[in-house]
Image 1: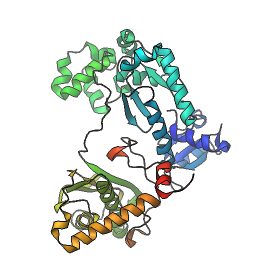
Image 2: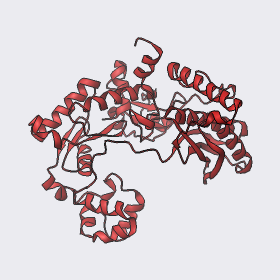
Image 3: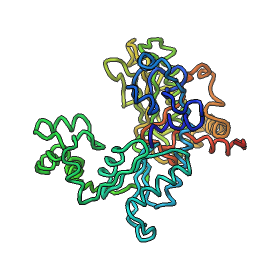
Image 4: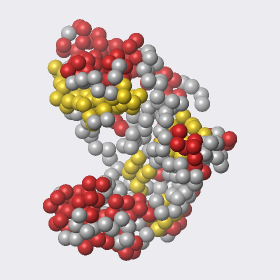
Length: 410
């Protein structure tokens, strides 16, 4: 999708169309999450501070993010893509891979016609333009999709992929970070063509199978198939940005409670429990944290996790100014249903959590919550890069799904 969040805002609000707008995390957000192409043409870009954007363009319009609406549009698009092929990998909230190999005989269309059909389907479902890239492997197709934005269609035949990529900096390929690029640069490999000339063992010895895959990616031969299943979670966590250099212990503790409550609800939603947790605060010097904090038993109740947060603040934090909190379950596993075995008190909290979850599922997150969170941050939730429209990665519930639960007519 092209400037996805900003495009949705311009779609829903005609007054924003043709104007430089930028989406921020709530009304008090100061960093631009994404901006319209009109803003980009002026030199404004993602991650730029709002103050700087307004220096470039005094008429720049700030728009608070609406993550539930973005999740709604994304979900409708991802579901519609199933009408073209069952082999769809939701890569992020605004991007997907489609393998049309098994459907070629059915559709009997040229690559160009297939690309146009995908674009038309997405526009019919969402009202938005998108850019499509077609090739013989995922990495080359993704690179192709970035070449003609917005509203583009780029086709790289598999037999041309290696030649088309040879002068492309390897850092531009999906999954190649600065560390890998630096390793390759020390060996004289800057472009994909340079990497393709190296022995595959150079990357394999240093990075294992991911390194071997990168070598194949640079040759236009990415072996990774389209993944249609979501793997079981290795961890589940929630974090939030705070005001810079926060040193108020009560404020920090409230943010940690907020994340612990979100994590507990998410574990319960997917019938998971965990015993080992990472609890951390981020300062200018890096993370202050511990991944060795454990509850007595595996749990999905926020109370013992909050107790760990309280312990963490008193044992690990030394008064440093922090700007981010994180609470993560490191060993989520299927819930065994043993809660009732530990007595009447635990059973009471189990029933309380169930009732609270049902209310919040129907009327919205934190409709019912503990009093200590009454003055929590009003910054909206953020759609994580790994968000999915279903399963344990659906951290943002689409507006329409919430309305169905509450019986509201939208």
